[in-house]
Image 1 (tube, helix red, strand yellow):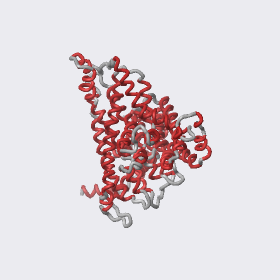
Image 2: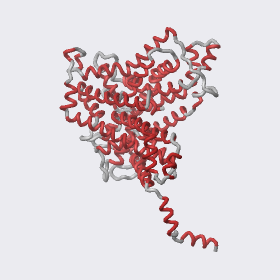
Image 3: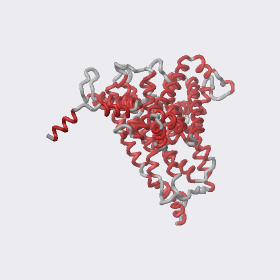
Image 4: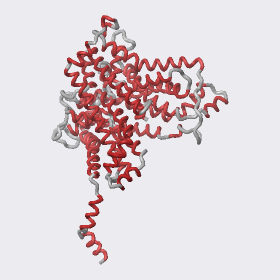
Length: 566
């Protein structure tokens, strides 16, 4: 009887008064949070699920099959491309370590002169698009009597490494800045010299950070499209990214491309997990129970060779390729070299005022990047608020979805977007909306990291005060959170805008005839051999990036561009 009464009680309709009280506690803002969660799933989960499903489907019938994997990896050339990517990634990681670790040590631990200038060069290498650096090196070393043979695996490794070493620099210098001098002093007291102390004491303490930077450089190298396409294809070898591009030649074989990209995705996830595990070991940061003094090591006469090495690396990464690009941008014919009678502004005039395709590409680039930055910030702020205030169940899943694009190579994400949203009923392929959504998803982790960090720094009691006075959550966000997070969100917008404006790996797969951006047009111009116009267009992109980055310096401070990778 007792059980029957409980069933009857459960089946009785809720009293009107109780229902009214529950509805009165329901906030309209909850609909906004649910809508943002749906957008997050649409942007992140749906393309990745579609990518995996497509890799197991037949193109015509949609039936499940493993034929796509056999087609993707049954060809020796395509298998060799995967091995070439691994060789490229390992070579770039090792060379980036050779470049980045000594410079980080010199800046963080020694009295090497001109540290600010060296940091500026590292920063310049960081904001320079890899494909733009590759074009500079093609102009420098691609000629018959160039510095070295750039059209080779060795040449590709060098070109990619000189733009990837800032990752190693950031991780290493950040760790070195936290290590006190106590253990180094102890080694010196026992008779160890500078080199022995560095290799036996200092660098082992920050080894997890160094390995983390090497892994990031490895992943950056295997996911790049621009530099390998510009160098590897003329050298008659493929890597994974260029081979995936081949799948998108007519007829498009998206199912094979999806199957071919899955191992790249798995490798990336595995390496990111390893990198997080290594850097998560904070033992290198605190050697003793309390923070110790950090004194610079006096190098004596060796200060100048160390500075020369840092400037040499900076020249390889920034000065030489950028100088030759600027020379080409202001030249009537870049092959004639530098001379007064070869100087002209005609290339910029042509790009800015006459070439309608270039004008459209410039407009598209900054429009898409700006819209993606606003969209990413808005979505990230909403999800960070839901997660920090635990407004819905499963907030850990939402945080994971926001960070998931960080471990998805841009080229793989583009294939997922193509598989999910190119076919009917959406048919978004080649549209501006597709480009903006892809850029938003690609750089969502940057926005979410900034929004979540800012949210954690604000006490919820400030919002509760607004709600006690009768305001809703949206009013509390507008009047309390937004003003407090204004500086952080402005910096996050810049951090999304700059990489979105230069993005090539995903854009090359999703661009249409009317949605070309600067990065894609630079790639097309390089294939045509029109290096003067290419250099002028690249210089415009670089100048805008530097100006926006300079604004970031004023908003956040020194090294703000480097924080997103820590």
